[in-house]
Structure formats: structure tokens, C-alpha cells
Image (cartoon, rainbow, N blue to C red; front, side, top):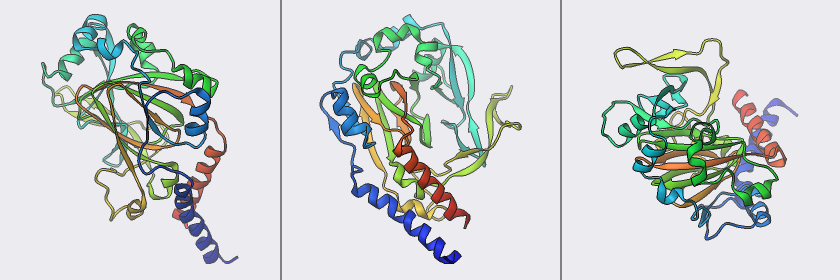
Length: 317
């Protein structure tokens, strides 16, 4: 086969993947379940086909839904020093000035952080409790009894416990840039709202990736930020595109992507399947807990790897 014919074949195959996947059952909107499913039902209807859903009444028994007020959090966690991500613009782990920039991890008393969120203290910077190494169990063990260490029906469905349980609390200016995770994710909103923009894995051909020099924000003595390169670290593949304001001149392929948008309200749980791209915003002071279960590296993973390799091949030719 001539090189031109091979390229056309690859492009044709790549173009067919997303549309075939949608025809096979990607939803046009995120469906709701009125109750938590049985383990078998959840695995069969949602995990196996890799489809998201919002589950109501799955965490209605959590004491946290009523207890986690500012007064309670000050009393229980209060002066304890915790990790807080600080950025000048609200974007942690995101592309900025042609680098992949991570936040400054600031250690501060939790009560001081709450003063900033409640605007009792003003700051030009954006603060977000978002450390993702199971920070609920590691930094906030006092709060675990108000939720659950795992979600029993999910643990039974997957035959494993979560790798991490994370606690999230921050300002409305804090934004999570578009990315994907190798986890089955149950994202539970305790108070406020989370705003998700989602892409299925089949949209990979339309979503740009580039390699970026990793760097970290550092606060200077005068309070300004500087970006310090992690010179010994390897370049990081990341998505430079803002899905809320995409530059279609620079990334015209993204016009073919079909994002889903949903709002997860207090008391609701989003099942975010592995390898789904997601961009996240929140209401001010929103509190959430999420459970990361390691994905199975099965045919879904192989499908994504094939799609990713084909996308990269077309870009190189």
C-alpha cells in the first residue's frame, strides 16, 4: 500500500471510531438514577459499558450533609495545619505560558484557609484544598466518620477498595483543567455544586495534547508569583485547550467533539468512568469527597490506547 493510501486508511479508521462509539451507546446527556444500584446492576449497566451517571439518594445517610458547616469544620479541624494549593489564577495543574504549571503547596492552619474562603481575609490569590493522595484519610481523618471509608456497593462491584479518598473545598475561582484519570471515580458533593464538562474517550482524536516543561508556582517575598521550572523532570503531556472557550483556529478538530455538561448538587454522586475527559468548576465554598477505584486494564483501556496511537500517528504524518 502506498504511503498516501495508508494515511487515508488511518484517517478513515480514526474518523469512524468516535461516531461508531456514540452509536453504540454514549449518552447525549448524563442520566440520573434515583437510588444506588446493586453491585451487579452497576457493573453491568455502567462500569462495563463505561457510561457516566448521577446517582441520587446514595449518600443521603451521611452525617456530613448536615454537620459540615463552617462552625463544625472550625471546631473539628480548626488549627490543624493542612496542605492547600495556591495559584494566582485558579488553575492548578494546567498549561500556562507554555508550561505545565503546578500549584504552590502551602501549609497553613485550616481555620486560616476558612477565613479566606469566607472572605474574612482578602487575598488576590486562589486557595483550594485539593491534594489528591487520599487527603481525607491522611490529613482529615477526623472527618471520615461523617462519610464512609468506601462505597460498599462499588467496592463489591469492582472487588476492591478505593485507592484514595479525597476531600475538596475551595473558592469558585478554582478550576480543574481538562484531563482524564485511570480511575473509576465516584464524586460526591456534600454542599454547593460542581459543574462538569465531560468528553468520552472516543473524543480523543479531537482533543489536543502537547508536551510541556513542568513547573511550579512559587510565591515571592513581595507576594507575587514566579514560575520555577522543574528542570530535571521529564516533559508532561497535557491538554492546552480550554473547552469553555476553545480556540478553534488553533484546534479546529475540537469542533467535532461532543461535550456533555452536568451539574452535581449537594447530596448527589457522579459516577465518572475511567478515561473520560473532564473539566470541573464549582460554586464558592463547595465541599466534596471522591473515591478513586483503580480501573481494570481491559478492552476499554486497549481501545483507548489504539485510539491514542492512531491520533498521534496521523499528527506525525
